[in-house]
Length: 51
Image (cartoon, rainbow, N blue to C red; front, side, top):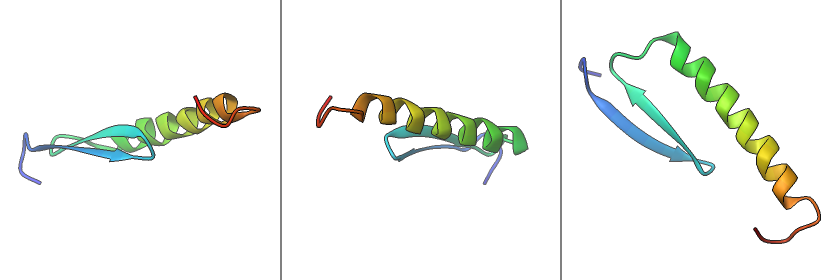
């Protein structure tokens, strides 16, 4: 991607920013964020059908 080009992608309810300037760190942050998102959703859904 060209330098400075930014795209926003929504996946599994979590928004991820992909930038032409991004390096390997963005991947690590994304993985951690998705893991925490899943943990949060599991807690919200435990014993509940909706939230």
